[in-house]
Image (cartoon, rainbow, N blue to C red; front, side, top):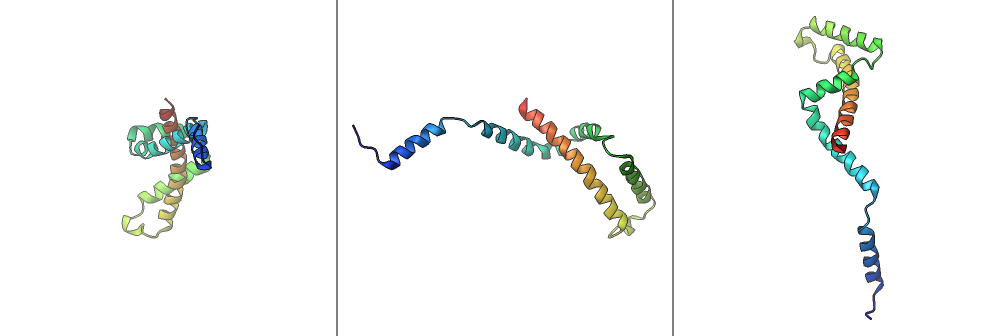
Length: 116
């Protein structure tokens, strides 16, 4: 019988644990894979349209009114007047809200694709 050092015992115990899979790793891996898939979905017009259809109607009426009024004002603004304008800041703020909702939906779509 060979003597085992403390280091050998530790390595053997670690190998025993290495053979067992922790279900949290599967969940974390799936979440990472879904997050990695989102940029590809964001670049896919069909996926973006699908996400938009899920998001459409989810905001209150005031949000949609703000979007419509900003677009109306944009139409009547010369492009050279947009730099540093309050309208441009408003458009970016509205876009951030819309993008967050769509990105959430794209992540959900990616999660479903990874799970399939």
